[in-house]
Image 1: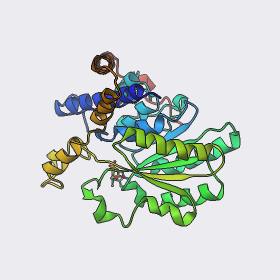
Image 2 (image 1 turned 90 degrees about the horizontal axis):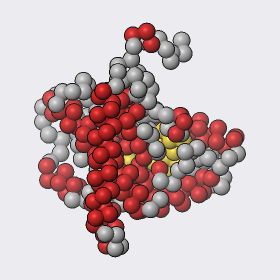
Image 3 (image 1 turned 180 degrees about the vertical axis):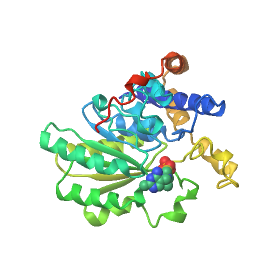
Length: 316
Ligand SMILES: Cc1ncc(C[n+]2csc(CCOP(=O)(O)OP(=O)(O)O)c2C)c(N)n1
């Protein structure tokens, strides 16, 4: 993927999420959402190495992963608004956006819930023998779920084509990572004999390169890798958190210091330094803005599911 394409995908996530933040604030969307703003380089850096046939499993903060893997922006936003045209017919919502046809096993409301799914997909990929891989994204809070250790253990033993991507964004809800997480997350792979790496999660090229190495190993039967991508969550744990939190759990200065390290500004600056004309970059931005406007307008005009479909798509 070219640097322009990386920028495009990151901008798509950013603009989709910014608009979502606005509609939550205006009360147009009941409930709340977990925004991915600030972490775009992780999803895009990893997914830019994947084909449609590869699998990803995601988290409660899953819109960025869905879009980075090639999920349809309109179908995602229609899903979040409970429309019949949503990717899960309006029955899944923000925390369950999934599209198996794009290799997206879904966002997941259970912290660490994607990990077992991704191990299963990795085993299926290995049995299929087509060279597919399976990637799971989880947070630093998710890293403390026991299933991470179970996944690494079995993936090393069976040489599964699995990549575990921990997005260490500094917080698990309102607790700092350092107050609930012992040691270095990436190091947890080492006793099992898995590969591991720490990467700057705000540098899309660095994430892309680190994931490329890990995925090349996975595709050739050399087993799993755990990547810890260090980044920062710009927005609240949920968009509505100010309505129920009694105090602050971080400072404005801390947030500002990370906004200065904006992953999108970083890649934009790199493009300009490499001689890409600024008009080209502006065109990319304008096109993304038009696409996002269109996705929202269409979703808002779409119908809600018919009552008669309430029991469709149920297994039991
Ligand atoms: C099994 C489980 N335990 C607790 C929760 C409540 N919960 C939702 S998000 C979250 C924090 C997750 O933090 P992290 O994994 O670091 O992801 P981030 O929100 O930072 O992206 C918690 C504890 C849950 N959804 N599932």
